[in-house]
Amino acid sequence: MAGVVFATTLVGASWAGGQTAPPPPTEIVDSRQFVIHFDSNRRQPTAQDSGIIAKIIDYIAACKEWGHPVVRIVIVGYTDSDGPADYNVALSKARAIGIADALVAEGVPSEYIAVDWKGESSLLVPAGDDVMEPLNRRVTIDPALGDSDDSGPFRTDKSGA
Image (cartoon, rainbow, N blue to C red; front, side, top):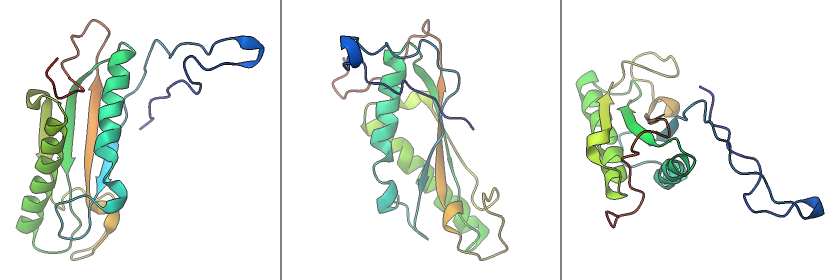
C-alpha cells in the first residue's frame, strides 16, 4: 500500500532567495497503514514499536489540518502460528483491543474505531504450524481519510475541545 506523501519541505521554512516554502498538498490520495509488532506471547508492543501510537495521533492531526480528516480507523490483530489456534485468536484479540484502548486514551473517539482479530489465520510470512515468526505477530492500523467536507470527528487533544 502506498503511503501518503506529505510535503517534503517545512511550511514557513526559508528557501533560497527569501521565499517561503509552499503550503502542504491540498489532496491526499492514499491513506497509510501503521503496523505494530509484538514479542511472542506478549500483549504489549515491542520496545521498537512503542512510539507508533504517537505517530498515529500526529498523522490524524496532520490529515485534519490539511483538510482530509480521518473518519474511521480499522485495527486488526494477528499472531504467529506458535501455540494452539484458540489461544492465538484470543491473543490477537487482546492485542487489537489494547491498541484501540491506547488510541482512545489519546483522544480518538471509540465509536470511530473498528476492531477485528485473525489469530494465526492470516500470516504475513508463510509458515508451518508452531513457527515463531516475528513479522506475523502484529496489529495493523488503517486510518480512512475523508474529504474536507467531513466533520473530522477525531480530537487530537484530551480536553474535549
